[in-house]
Image (cartoon, rainbow, N blue to C red):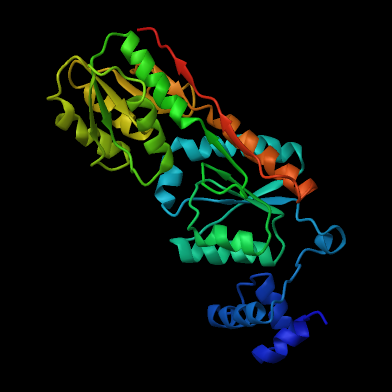
Length: 326
């Protein structure tokens, strides 16, 4: 027999109306009561459906977007917002709204996603990061929630869309070699992220034996970090090509280089063709085609929502070299 609101209320020792208000996250209910009722709901495996429309259609017509733990990176890094633009374009066309997971830290975000799923406020999820140890991802798998990841993951049973980051490294290596550079310096990037290691591998695999390659990942991820790093790399030989793994860091370097003659070609991976510092930056770059990443992710999720038995799709979106004329 299905668990009802009255069953939950009885075990939680509250009125059924209180359970209803907890489900709707009514601010009149204290946090302590909400926590107690939600714990009972989880223990009794109660799955509320708070939207009257959903009672008929069993659809929320909404997609949950799971953002990275580092919320500041989400707001500062144009990659995430650009991917979100692609997601939104397809979602609006399909009649879906978008809900962002919120909260400081993984625990709060986990609780929020649980709430979205258990209350059937979303039909599926899109993760803006890839981590097979992520508890939210494990939760989605356990609850059979349709989801797509933007990023690569070593699991054949999971849908994902990602850049061809190895190709991105290869393109940089080939282009800089054609330009005559014999020294490459890779700057920035957390090697725990697969896209960073794949790009570096693509570079290493496609440079000649006489090219000197150095790597420095010991910096942060903000524009300020890039700005403060310029003095550190200013001592590099002037015939060195600087490959920056993140455009936010690159923009900090570009700002710093305005103080003196910019003798380094600062090559980076950009989410959009037109960026904030294009008026002072005449360097070529790799276009990550990030809007298309969002488009492909949302299209993949729509397919799952139509047929939850489709074979997992794992797509790679091509990148391209953009030549900027000085």
